[in-house]
Each structure stands twice: as structure tokens, then as C-alpha cells.
Length: 80
Image 1 (cartoon, rainbow, N blue to C red):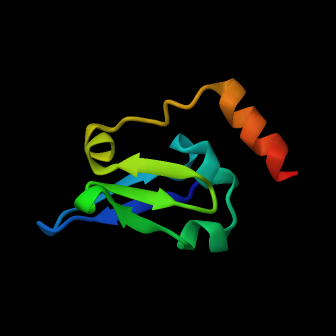
Image 2: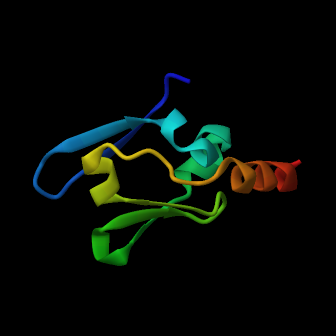
């Protein structure tokens, strides 16, 4: 998937990561992805429709989702 997650930081930088690094975002609809909230006093992003949380620190460090395959497959099955 070629889509990117881009986050604008308060200091003017923009960081981007492939959506594919975050399987729940990759499988989410554009509407689900657009429904997000800034969390943790600006230190994270939460997508309630996808039950996904991504920390800005992890994005800065280039960390991919740490969700287990089993957990993701269970979530995906519940969406069907």
C-alpha cells in the first residue's frame, strides 16, 4: 500500500510513515482513518473506529506496529 501517515508537529516538522506499518490503519476505510483524536496531551493519535493508538515518539523513531499477528487477525475477523 502506497498511502502514508503524515503528522505535522508543533515545531514545524512533518513526519511520515507508510500506512502499511499499521495494519489497522491499512485495513481501515478513509472515513475511519479520518476520525482520529489527539491523545496524551499531544503525544499520540487515537482512531476510535479502529481501536488504534500511535505515539508520536514511535513515529519519530520509525517504529512499526507491535501488534501480534494473532491479535490483528482476531480484530480483522470481528470486522467481517
